[in-house]
Image (cartoon, rainbow, N blue to C red; front, side, top):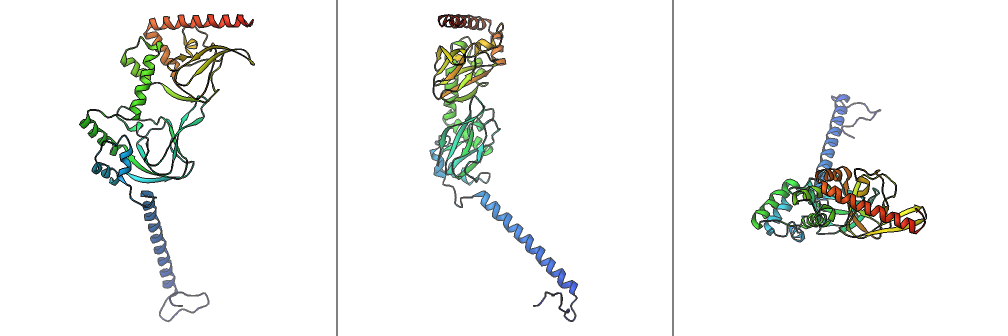
Length: 338
């Protein structure tokens, strides 16, 4: 064996054993460096495109955000070096509600689930998206607070095209300049929320600017059938508006005895009685969802500020709350529980 000295082998004439050992160490070190470099290059390649194939720009055509763009613009998006293809395993979270967002995603393979935070803090699956669907764009739109309004979790192994904010915004601006305005699903949702707030009798005295400011402070929550949102007698620190579904307000004079007080439909509200100036701060009744429901939560300090800014609104709410208390008293008397 040439170039390697065994422990019992005498060194060859004219060759010092230390030189051979040094060459072995040097060769091994070089091999390790080359192997590490090759592994690093391979990782970068896999990170760049784990699916091992180029992205078809026509997939973007099905997304409302890119629907008006010519094909050459879509090709620029998928070929932009700032975009990359990423993969997630089943059950992995791609986005989390409340986090700041700087990227949007196009699904190339697999499926993901849209999840939002329920009233009790649990996450509830709301919808699923598959190949060709887009998500995460809401946090990138001009005028957005930049926060994720929902979490996204992989239902299967998924392959996604990750598109950064700095790639998206110039394209959106170009479309807006050409067409005068750009509409997408998030715009429609915001308009729908604003319309619901405007239709709510509680906010009739507010102008459009105040309604917009109010809508931006709302937190959207999902309720499961039978889920209790507020409990009678507990302290209250927020107001709720029904966006979808039906809610039921009821009295609980005894743990096993419920008395229906009111049914709340889309656009109606509850929880205001605990936030009034002369209130003891406790809920007058319990409220639960009659089926799947979507509600908006307004912080108590924001509602109290509205009452201070609009004395007529405060008077209106106080009168309505007094009528509600009288109705609750009559119901309890009818059941001999007052």
